[in-house]
Length: 324
Ligand SMILES: [Zn+2]
Image: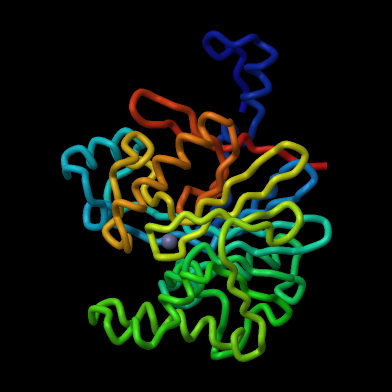
């Protein structure tokens, strides 16, 4: 193809370079099937000297309007539209792998097989990120809902054979209790059964060690009680060289609605008022201090910061960075 006239507004040298490109060549373009897959779902972030890897477990379609409370449907639709979303939208599931230099700690394990084919990818992404399940020393559970513990066991066996599982005493006292399950409404019984099925292989092996209070679990990682979403819901704080990352579990679920208005809550909180109070407290703290946050249901890579905006907050995702 030849053409002597420059493209309108482009320098002649640049125009001729573009005209030489295959797109303009007029020849047939080889057809290639669309791949329809994503890059492996892991993202690395240093927190001082500690390496944190977000491990995506996948996404699943969710109707926010069906599960949020304390917001009018019209307002929710406005919030979603402002984020270029509409119901149902892809909701992220994430765990975090923390390498302190001496211990490899996994915070939450994804949904396993409990939520269908678009989730349950945490272990594949852990391997893609350069680690093996056998290398995980400790697993810290934010709470025992299926999308956080579903990756712990498969076919009655521990997926992380060398790991000790740690969770707040109050969380296990609730979800691992036959008496509590017997007294729970019918629609909640499966959650208890799932918690028992996922935790029992570790309990039997002597590898389940609950803790109480806000304690340091390994140097650089400590637990902070944040009960409300569940009775023993816990955040884990990674801290090194004055840099802090707050892994807040399920303090929020729908970014588009709950950052502008943190009083919006989710239908499956154990104690909605307590969950709301925890959300208000932690949002205010991390915004004031400039701490990084990591959320199980923030969009991948699920790491960023909050800044105050009117009566609510704006979420600023991390700036993608190559590491050396
Ligand atoms: Zn969750």
